Length: 204
Image (cartoon, rainbow, N blue to C red; front, side, top):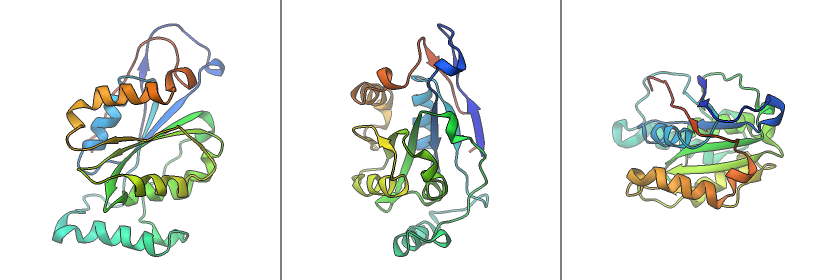
């Protein structure tokens, strides 16, 4: 589990006056890590990286046998905790945050299995919070990933649209993220004054 705080400058505000945002992401190929880093260059946020319990899993081996089997298991019984793969424990206090942005890879049309595990365990703690969804895929549409998010975090207040960054849009992610933040009204809803910047310091 990697947890860091993004740096900020500008007008000082007391903790009680500052709406706090958490960016939660999982990244197998590195695309979602790059998206999360770009997001942190535009907003002030803490970051939580979701990691599988076992290191060095090769989800792409044998024609993606492991990755596809994990998704199939969740699809068969999404209400059972036994359907979700183990992840490293996290101890982030979600009560500190007014907004949570989830950066999710698409696996076989669904949200990546390790991130589904985190939301299965912690989605109920996001009740009433503002939640944004950013999805990375090569070219597949994201409707099922949106469905997974709504299933796993049923009582939050989703921002009015998710952001889809496909392979063609990855190089333009900075502009896409900026436009999306404006579209969802994030700057009015949850940001603080001044320029925000931060990066993820992680070996994954």
